[in-house]
Image (spheres, rainbow, N blue to C red):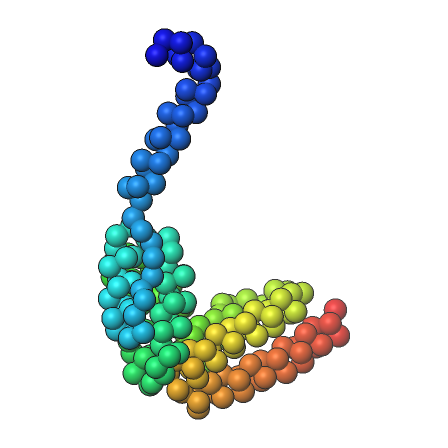
Length: 182
């Protein structure tokens, strides 16, 4: 044993000890896997358990997985189920009330979160109009997922699509007027 200790440098010994420490700490990290259930309510129960077991940093991934499960069995009551889940998430301190509301509205409400806020369109929105429209386009895609593919709310989705087109026209006219006024 003395002959081995004499041949192993202190830096290698430290590296071996550090790797053992890392392996031990990995074993104590909670497994952050999602649900395998195809039933939305069962999947939500699984996700709730996982989120309260130290995996809250993966909330976005779990929310996406729950949307995917709901797409497999779309129905109007899925809106309520997601609303209840988001309220629970807020009550548990995983999300603020505002964040929970934003998640819900992004997928299940016709209004656009991308256009939320009080600001002057000429000075704030027009200089970044392309970015705003890209954000709104992505949000419309999320609304298609939530309203159409998760909750079968065709009317709601088509209203959101109409609002998108109206906002695009109004923004174009507003920015044209702003440019003319300068």
